[in-house]
Image 1 (cartoon, rainbow, N blue to C red):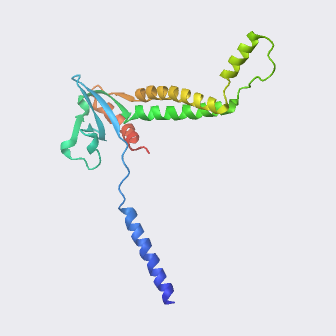
Image 2 (cartoon, rainbow, N blue to C red; image 1 turned 60 degrees about the vertical axis):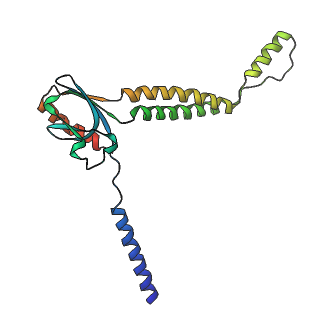
Image 3 (cartoon, rainbow, N blue to C red; image 1 turned 135 degrees about the horizontal axis):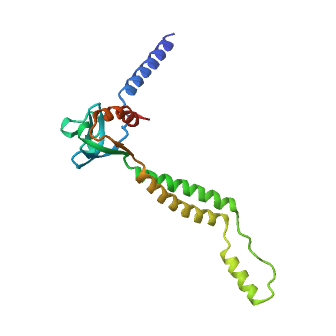
Length: 198
């Protein structure tokens, strides 16, 4: 009985300590969005979006010091009446697009290369020199399924990376405000949803 009580006490202590450690885990890194703001007086302001409220867009002056709480000295508020338009995109969207495109192209190329199989090699008799040259040329260009997979994988991987880079560079959302608080307030819910979306 004493052993059972000791074992139960040890298990409860373990679970209690484990629960304490879980509650002290650091928060997940926030998604970082980059904003490019054109002001009413035609200035361009760029930075990471820190927060949005119904009257202003607050940028972080330094992406390195982005995590909450952000000191007031590192915040750059831009009032809604000073915003003509702004665009929002994910940080490192070009790199992510290139990597996803390369990965998708590489996998597709490998599958296509392996599925096409080995090229046939002619081993029959050759009766004249001209046919012999053609057969030798054809046999030298024959590829195994593995060689096709490597070639197609790299070729489609590079093509996918280029396409992904272009898509990543163009993947941004633009908002027109023209200094109107009402328009900015209407967009606030959409912006907050985008910022906190998992």
